[in-house]
Image (cartoon, rainbow, N blue to C red):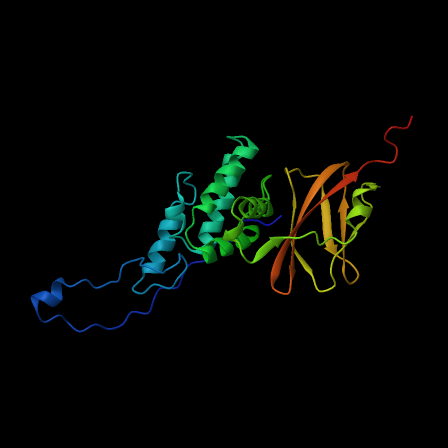
Length: 248
């Protein structure tokens, strides 16, 4: 599982030499631009150190569970994603799983710009350690709650051997071969409802991925695949059990 990456500091903006003000009006004139204006997303370039100030303010509130969507939208994409992952980790022991998932989904839906929302969601997996709630679960929640907010993605049953997989019982450690369209790449994976049974997902032969679970259980598997620049979402249900269960 990925660990929280080191902070990435924005480089200091190049300072331009300014002429000495010659009048009182020039002396009292503002020397910097507002930090945020119409049409700017949280990661847009700002002159006169504005972006660096926003980065500092965002990191200062990384651990603040009272951050709302309006403030989240002023952060850079990287800092906003880190805040989401930290909130999921910190609050998981304080509230029910479903309630936390709903709370963070509402926070994300409050972001005003679709492009910023997309970049934050796609950046979650690299922004911190997964503690029970997977980033792809949030993606599914946002898409189910507000389909129009993620126009680049859609639900589509792209697993070609779904019936075969859902009708079998697999042994722990046995490869589960998931067949997908030839040009598709699986970009994200999640266990709906959480859990850490121990698993591995890796590319197999063309148009195939291999999944292994190392402990028995029944799992709802979420998948996000990319096909011709479109993101497709699918869900399959798998059963894993020891062959000795029920015998004796």
